[in-house]
Image 1 (cartoon, rainbow, N blue to C red):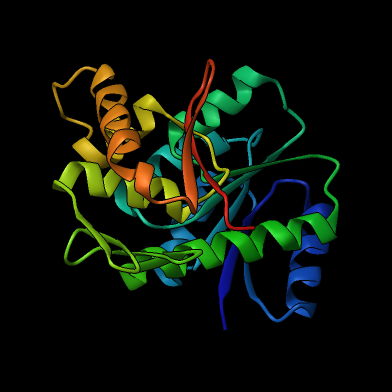
Image 2 (cartoon, rainbow, N blue to C red):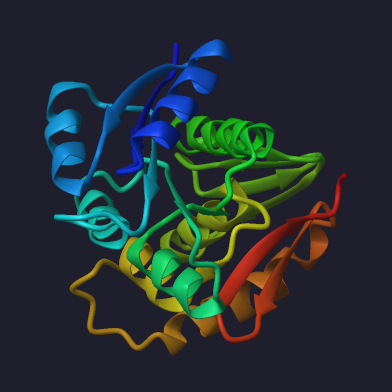
Length: 225
């Protein structure tokens, strides 16, 4: 059974989300702010974190940055009434994997949860299938039928990250921190160069595309649907 940490200072909403997720087969742990969430994670390592942004003591952005540094593969969804482009950019830059706006539609929340957990399983399994294309993390290869491509490490990690979360927008800074490391001296334009190379090399794989999102960064799009 998957476990989900719900971090929400509105206790009525917190209880409602936990009860709904419980009815749909998930084990839940609750916290009212970021500091309580960090304490909860020390006791029970969740498979997914759902966190409000505007909370006392430690807000959702601070919590996300803290978690992303300590647990690079932990899926994090931010839930908030703040839905401006700048707010979303802040959340994604901090390391959030998904962003859901209030008022919360519980059925939509469930769809987001299911999608994030699927992506998380793909990341930890080291193999990812997009249509007829197979990415193998251990061999750094992309294969479709008789077509086999072996990529340099950084290019493969970048492609695997994007394809593990199709339609998820990643900022250049976020990709730099996760692929090159937060202490890297490389310029963010390094991401642009690697994306350009990937587009040229992966043109033979029709199951996906790498898309530039103006003002934000990049996302992968599945063409096999």
